[in-house]
Image (cartoon, rainbow, N blue to C red; front, side, top):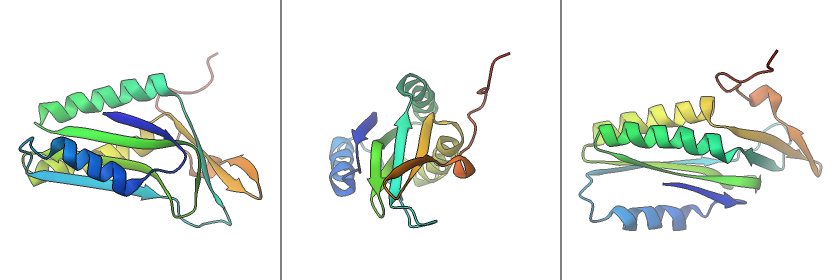
Length: 145
């Protein structure tokens, strides 16, 4: 359950939808994580490019890991511009037991930052500037020789 949106995420609506989708699924834990654009280095916001085929493959692998633990994972991410104090990323784990959900959301969010094929740009003075200093190379990426 991967959802991509143009622009900022409507956090209350998305979390409510997910909760309602799973309300009768008998999960004892629902652990959401919401990422928001914070003010730093004089930016006006962030902008995101996503390579969907790799993101879908990466997310499918995480869904399988969740299933093996009796859990499910949902994720929403923005494409394009997201301004200060708006959300660009939501993830949530539903599981029968809280410990599984707490541990899994931590693992998922950390791997997302390291492995998801999403490129971040600073929005500054009406310009889109690649955020190289805050980017992480995706494992296996690079220039082929």
